[in-house]
Structures are given as C-alpha cells and as structure tokens.
Length: 310
Ligand SMILES: [Zn+2]
Image (cartoon, rainbow, N blue to C red; front, side, top):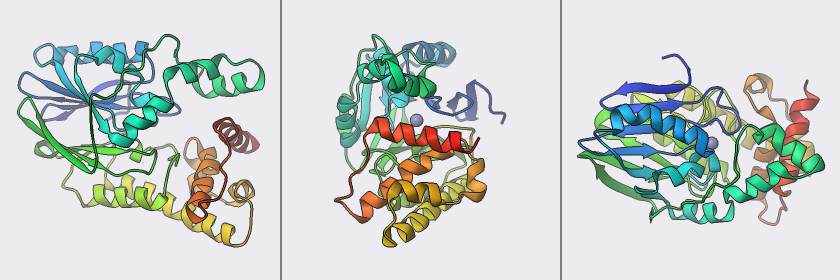
C-alpha cells in the first residue's frame, strides 16, 4: 500500500488515516466501521487537519456515526482534535487522561508564539499547526490494564502498555479483522521518542504485537508496517538501552552519552536527534535521582544533534 495522505482501507471495515511524512505532529489515526456505529482511533494535532480527516471519513460515518473515540495516549497529535468529536464517548488510560490535563493545547500555542530563541525553536518543530483556540476535550471513560467493548457489534480490545512512549500508552486491537492500531508505540521511518519509559515496557509492547494474531499493523507515525517493522523498533530500543547503560555505568553525563553513541544504520531514520531524550530516559530508569532537563532543553538538544550532523 502506498504511503499517501488520506484514508486507506485495510479490509473488514477497518481503515487507516495516514499523514506523510510522519514527522513531528504528522500522526496517523484509525476508523473501524461497525453496524450503525464507528470507532475513531485518535484525533489529530489541530482542528483544521482533524476536520479534513473527519470529512474524508464521512462516506463511511454517514451511516455509522462515530460513537466511540480512543486516544492512544496524551500527546496532542493524538487528542487535540477531540473537540470535533465531543458527542462521542472518549476512552483513554487513566494515566493518559491525567497527562492530557498537564499539557493542554494552550501550552503549545504559547510556545509557538514565544519570542526569541524558544519561539524559533518550537516553530521549527510545530510551526505548521494552529493551536490557538483549541478547547481541550478530555476522555469521558478511563481504564487501567485491559478494556474490551463493542462498537456497532464489533469487539475491540484495548491493552495498556505504558508507561513507555508516554505515561499511558494503549494498543487498540480489532480481533475480527486482525488489525492493531499501535499509537506511538510504533514510529515507522522515524525514530521513537521515549518521553516516559522505561524502555523495557516499550520492548515488551513490541513483543506483545509480534505475538498477536494480526495482519495489519497501523503505526502512530509513518507507513503501514509488518512484524519485521516492529522488530526494527525493538532492536533500536534495545540498542539504545545497552549503549546508554554502558555509558551511565562508566560515569558519563547523559547529554555527552547521547553525542557519543554512534547510531550507524539508525541514523538514517527521521528525527534521529530524539536519541538525546531516549538516552536521558535510560539514565532516569537506572538512577531515579537523575534530573532530566526541562522540555525546552530537550527540544534544544534534539535540534542541536540533527543540525550538527548536517
Ligand atoms: Zn504522535
């Protein structure tokens, strides 16, 4: 299947909404059409691009309106469009719902408008999106562990696998169609970013996907993939954990360690500067007293790593 902007049919009433190139903020979403009702997996980063997606989905949702939304996690590119589906029941993990309260759209709107170096930095990542005036609409139902429910007669199974990418990541399985929507447990063609960790939870989530009876794997960013794509993410995470642990034990500073690790083939993935955040997550796991830099400094480091390589 070609990686183009729009709605892609996977079969059995399951669809993927893909947004190339899958870089910062360009996330994927999913639609599962049941009998008279549909499930939407994730909204998008702002209202304009969420409305464009909902319009394209209306050929299916006209006869089967979206009654349930799942937000796979709290990052804005998976939930800031919730305002446009506020009539639906919105489900997320308890931890994701909590995290959404801490990072409202107004915070990104302010960073995107900040003067000077900080504003320039954030606009270089998120300048294409419009966060002004977005009303945060939070989940109406939360869960921990597992949750099974039906939408239009179709069974859906949610599995909490975080904290990993964020504090409350969930996978969305549609067993009758052998489909899984993974949210940001998978970045394909781009580099995973470990905002929360531990990496071991994320590696376990990759193993869970590989062991599942699935034929269609929809990542949070990037093109549709297969189990080999999942293994590649697992390999990256295991590599970072190994390399960072070695340096932490040798007494190296986390930021020095990130700049010291040779990514080799992984350097060809987009957003490879995320290594800075990922190494820091390993340090935090090894030493809970490790102090991580604030979010502005994290973005500064990622920017610096990618520009140093140019
Ligand atoms: Zn995302």
